[in-house]
Length: 333
Image (tube, rainbow, N blue to C red; front, side):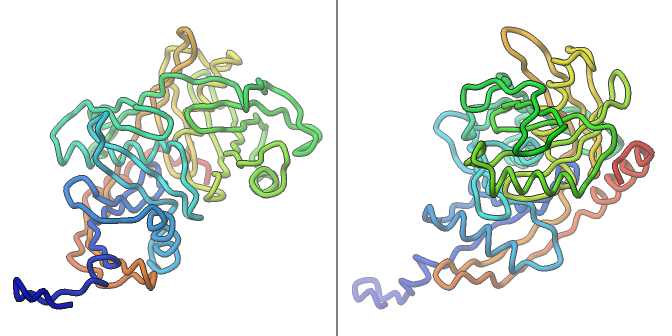
């Protein structure tokens, strides 16, 4: 297209469909994300592009694990806004591991060590903390209102025959929904079987649900295995680990008000459930950046191209690997 007044030639197609994205590849407890910076670099996604880019990134960016896409966006109500899309393209209300990763990016941009981020489940507070382990950047999220409701019905230590004849389930809503059961031993096949029922076949959960098995290791240590809605079996789900700590406190397996170490295959988070008018929980853990790069996304042809300016953060990668080695005796391997 040619502008006769200015003498400029430009592509209308490029303006509409071509998106240059600033990406940080990051993880919280090895829950891996692409973090798209829409705060310092504007991009003109239409609503459908958020879901489509997620699906296209998962299928086209080979060689890296992607559990979801984080979008850091401007907000009129808080320091920033968060959108999180699972690897299947569904949008989640909240993500504890992703929230910490976005908190780190926001700190790098603004220098704010305490901040507020707008999410679909409300405005949540975050904070930069001292490192939990040498050179492992650590951030906190506060979930202020936790309950045991699913669609206004309390599910607390109940058998759900459609899912299992013997396991007792509890529902914990931490801003997104979790179904949790205590087990003596982890059975990955059973976790996947029940997780698929909940998210694809069960009339009781038409919008799906996160599913977690947990074990009590001591009076201040728990271990968790999660089937994440929209993802499947995952190395870590931050909100699941926080929800399990609240449930364990509610059942007096750990003490409310104290710091609880919660382990998953991907690492360890520190949760502090507290009982006030309702339960609230603080979730603290790593936010590790592995690389950053730029790419071009053609939303019309749904193609990712021109990956460039790749920078690796080897020190952060090594620091987290050292941390995992330090706690390997407790991890679910």
